[in-house]
Amino acid sequence: MYAIFGNGNKQYKASVGDVLKVEKLDAQVGATVTFPVILVADDKGIAVGKEVEKVVVTAEVVAQGKEKKIIVFKYKAKKNERKKQGHRQPYTQIKVTAIGAAEAKKPRAKKVAAAENAQPAEAKAE
Image 1 (cartoon, helix red, strand yellow):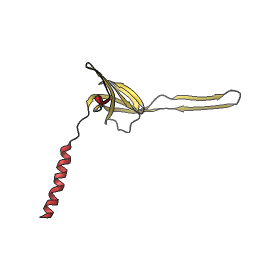
Image 2 (cartoon, rainbow, N blue to C red):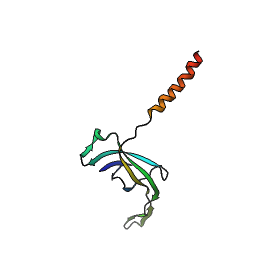
Image 3 (cartoon, helix red, strand yellow):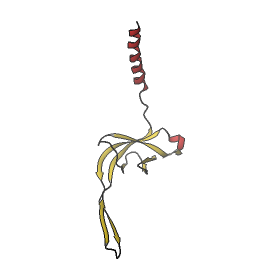
């Protein structure tokens, strides 16, 4: 089973257990991040569009770093024009832990909080 997910205007192919370098994320090492899925392929076939709206890729941040330096050299012949510049692209290294449906948030906590807020209001009315 694998999934295609998007991050930073790029798309990545991931299976459970893969370690990938993605565009830099604002997350600490050890944090869990989720990405929306574009396509899922398994033994049942390929699923896209509305079939994968609730599917997410869950990953753990392994490291933050920078790629190897590349040299950008601009040169114009016969003009004595030269410009040398270096660049190191930042990245986040992640390890895919799960591909599946998004975890449902606990709606009970909201209902309990609403019930607690309602009780004092009723007590004031008496």
